[in-house]
Each structure stands twice: as C-alpha cells, then as structure tokens.
Length: 488
Image 1 (spheres, rainbow, N blue to C red):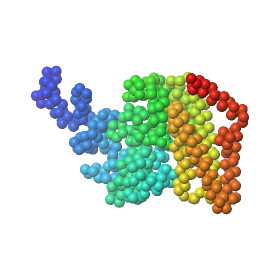
Image 2: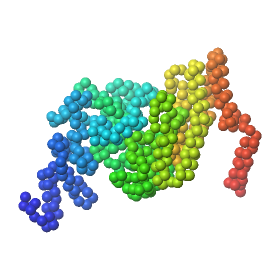
Image 3: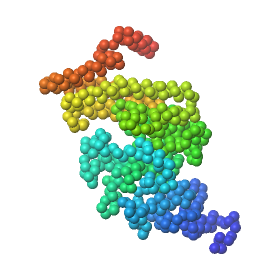
C-alpha cells in the first residue's frame, strides 16, 4: 500500500511493473502486452458470473481471455456469462461450475443485443446454407467421395462441406455435442435452439473484430476454389489489387466505415455486399444488393424463384440500384451502367449458348430413359456438372467482379472446350448405343434436340455451316494478325 501512496512519476520501471501486477490481482483485470508497454484494463462492471468465468479462464484459456480483453464486448461489460448463459430446459445446456451454460452461442443468443443484425441475417441466403442435404454437392460428399462411417455421417461432409455451409448440430443422449456436427462455424449452421447460422463464421470468437470481418480474407474461408472462387477473382480484379496496395489507407477500424467518406482507396467484399454508404445503412443480408443468382446451371434474376412461388421479395431492379449506389461512391454513372451491360451480356451468352442447350440435352436423356436414374454413374453427368458447376460459375463470377482471366481462360474457354469436345461427343455416343439397342423413338427425340442446338447461329462454326461473309471476315482478320505479328 505504501507503493500506491508514492507519486507515480517517481516510480522506477521495476516498481511500475510490480504496481501493475498488484493492481491486476486486486481488480481481476486483463493485462495486455502492447508493443512498448503493458496496458491494464480493469473489469469495470462485469456481472458476478462473468467475473468468476474470467478469473478461471485467464489461466485455463489465456488466448480466449486475451481475445475477449481486446473486444468491444469487454469494453461494454459483456462477459462470458452474458453470451453463454442457458436455461435449464435448453437442449444443449450443461452445468459448469454450478452455472447453466451452452457451449454454442447462436444467433438467437446474439439477438439479445443485436436484434436487427440477426433479423437481417436470418432473411439472407447465408442463413439457409446449411440446408444442403439432398443436393448434388452433398451426395458427392456423402456417397461418391465418402461413406457414412462417422456417427452415421460422412467424414468428407463433416470436414468439408459443413465447415462452410454449416452442420445440423446434434446433442447426444448424454448431453455432449455430437463430434460429427461440432465444432462447426459454418455460415448456415442449424443450432440446437432452432436458430440458423453462426455469427462466428465472419466474426471470430471471442474478439469479434470489425476489422477482421471487413477484410476479404474473412470471406475467403468459403468463397474460393474451383466452383466459387470469389476470393481469387477479387484478388485479380483492380479492386483487389488496390486493396493490397492501399490496405493501410482503408481506415478499417472506423466505427461507421462509410465508403467515400472514411475510405476511398479500394472496396472489400463487405463494402459492396454489406457495409454502409452515404445513403444506405449496414445490412447483414449479403444478397440484398445482388441482382443475378450465378449459382445454378442457368442464371436467373435473384427474385425469379420467389416470384414463381408467389412470394413477395425485394425486386432485382432495386437490389441492382442499391449495388450501383455503392459503386457511385467512386465511379461515375456511365461507367457503372456500362459495366453492368458488359456483365449482363456475358451471363446471357453463357445461358443461351451453353447452359440452356446443355440442360436440354441432359433433360431429354433422362426423360427418354437413356440415362440411369442414379446421378454421377455415367461420364456425361460428370461432364455436365463440371461445365456449369465449376467452369460456368467461374466465368460468371469473373465477369461480375471484373476478373478477365477467370472470365476467359478459367471460365468461358473451359466451358466451350467441355461443351464441344466432351458433352457433344458423349451425347452422340449415348444415342449411337441406344440406336443399336433398338430405342429408335427415344433416339429421334434426343437427336431433334441436338439438331436444334447445332442449327443456332452461335454453333454454326462447329458444323461448318457459317455464312460465307462471317467466315470471310474472320479469315481476313486472321491474315491481318499474321501480317502484324508473324511476318519478318
């Protein structure tokens, strides 16, 4: 106590350290190592339950303890108990040190303080990402790549698909969480309390940093790879290049973080899809500003399915208007409008030249019994899946986010090669076999579909039936190219 009475300015470094240690023990606070000094943060007005949690976890779980100590939750006196508290009737409740808690902090728990954010998220496509059971993707993981060998689940789905899409978290009869379904921070996790999603998919436990959620790496856990490479597409784009060059100018820790006011060097994923502008608030519905859905084999405007089902949703035109408002913080109206015309033209070309024809070919084969009912047991089914699910998505996402290499070489080039060099020959092989087996009527119907496709103008090059003037113009251009670049 004599140490506390002395003027602070007269203390030596050693006595300063002793004082900080004593005060930490006295107040039960968090001592954090800053680059050049120790920073003391007392517990302020924490609940008694959270004080008890922190007193133990600072030794048992020092990483978690320090992460929480850096969080805004800590500054707002939100501790362990405020997030993990549970009712005795909750399906995943456990008694820990005579206190009822839940290991899982679900969106329902977060909604006690963040009601509007959870409501917006619950309306989003992200919240439904866990409902993939029965999809072709999930069949691949459960049946074709894997087997139901881990508590009745496929290890491929457990360690792969569900870590992004979210698992259906199950509670075992003894009260433990099924290890086949937990740990999991998939964006569409189906929680024991019935809520959908995991806020921790974007906001790392226990720090919940805004800076982390605003950086493109937060989205890169899931949005990358052969079928939805948005992270790599972003990195190739001018937006991604500018981010890397100017990340120190993005003011990522700003409380409001309004594009055009707080930063202007580059947008991130959050900028375009979620964050505030001068005229729009933050939204946790990541699809609120998207006008096309680029996920299915044939792209549709994002509200098409809802309209077909009679549901009223935000029209795609309004979604596009809102996204264009984000663009308007840095770009002029003519540039924005012309970009969207370029993007739309690519999606429509993909749809009409490859996706609709491919879908028509696969549909007639199935309808006429020329394929088995079992998916993925015939080569053409893999070929078609690659075309739309991998290459077609890459092309569309590349165009959406201004990444020319993904639009062209990783996208439409591979779509075309797959269509002409694999899908069409495999279709012909199936018809030849069916004809040999006497299925002449089915073959005639399938061939009629194929002939209709190949007679369309965009495929005439393949059949050798292009108009003479079109062929002549291309030969002229090729000759001029050779003259410019190949002559001595």
